[in-house]
Amino acid sequence: MHEVSIALNVLDIITAQCKKEGYQRIDAVRLRIGRASGIMPDALSFAFEAIKGDSIAGHAGLEIEEVPVTGSCRDCNAVFTSDGEYVLACPVCNSGSFSITGGRELDIIDMEVS
Ligand SMILES: [Zn+2]
Image (cartoon, rainbow, N blue to C red):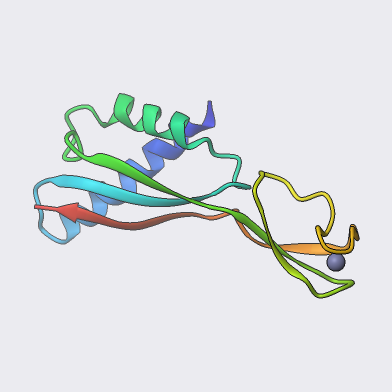
């Protein structure tokens, strides 16, 4: 389950950031996760709950904002948003020639500290 290593990574980053800024405790963390990133938000929340333990993020809640997959077609220039994790063809002209422009991100948006 690679969500565990991602959760550890997120915990490392926010812990370091929190200490650097001189705070004692992380209350909440907000992440932005693209639907095409291959990360399952539920699994990531579960992993984060499991590993945060008695770290300074031990009471932190994880809020996840999902970003839909977006793309643009090279044939008809349509810009589209997909409901799913994958795009197989342009929804306007059915072309297979398109580029994915969003939905792969994993960003820490911000966190609340005290
Ligand atoms: Zn198209």
